Length: 213
Image (cartoon, rainbow, N blue to C red; front, side, top):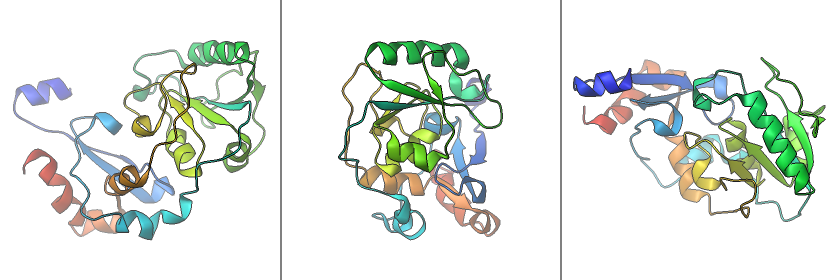
């Protein structure tokens, strides 16, 4: 669809849930693609928007190390999975992590749970509790990757369309990274909008510049 529109000189504005919690109270707006594959207008401040609405969510990078890995499931067939079988992906990653002497805890998507891999334990805690105990998080493209970065837990993200991609490692065998998050946080806050900002036109006045409108 996006390719056809571009060929005709047209654009599609994609409205989705926000990336930062509470996600249902915010909407992300991107032209011509989903999540990181979309086109966004840049931030309009030096971090004040993030600090005002989301700053309380940002925790320091965790200093402790742990062999506990939180492996994140997703809704099968979700477009952000790029066509992969998420159950097979999770089983493969759990086996590889176990071979690296990691204790794997699997957290399926609450709406459409997929089977827990044999090498993993099934999560029985809320996400905040799991993140506090984890030494790292592994996901393909779940928004949990964003929450992990905010919580200060190093994350492995394999899907290039994930908004957490710039803050993550991209293979479970690769070293974990803890980059500076200031610019990323500032930018992310300008990718999502409150309902009132949609209604009064403030959101459109900002995002339209992404495609020169």
